Amino acid sequence: VKPDLLVRMQSSVMEKIRPDGRSLVDIGSGSGKFLYCNRGRFDRVLGIEVSKPCIEFSRNQLGLNVRDSFPETISPPSVVTLWHSLEHIPIHDLSALLRRIAQVSDAKTRVLISIPNNGSWQYRWFGRRYAYFDVPNHIHQFSATSLDLLMKRYGFKEERQFFMFPYVAFGYVQSILNCLMPAHNYFYY
Image 1 (cartoon, rainbow, N blue to C red):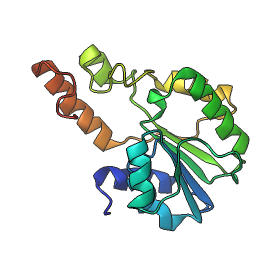
Image 2 (cartoon, one colour):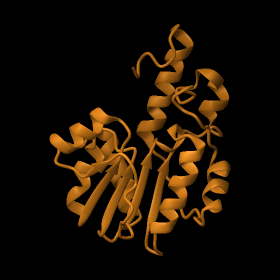
Image 3 (tube, rainbow, N blue to C red):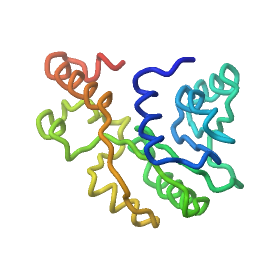
């Protein structure tokens, strides 16, 4: 498995926070590609995923440790990533997940969250045709401010923001197509 543009960008952002190499936890790990491409940088990698086919693929084809829920016991991770997964998690599960991440984290743990930004120009311009306005798949719409308020509730504080070109470029292309086509996010699906 070779890293594509998105995985390379995600990895680049992760490297900017200089993780210490203990462990990586990827929540919403999907096919496991990000975990697989970064497994050599950490002593341990763990994926959390709800899709059974993705779990099976990650385990059987990529040899990754992927579970359907956060483990009961875990050492403090170096990095916890949520690459466009936070907006999919129901509120009750979201609260429990953020509480659990806070419990297992130490002073060196960094949490990287990439979400659609409902404070962006794309969101303002395209409204319901915005690529990431994807009801019912996206349960929540976050702005930088609302995400910051949510994370503060669990003891986290923002350190940095990063611009991720692949997500922005896809958002514009898909949003324009959403204006031209009868089906929402046809290009994506």
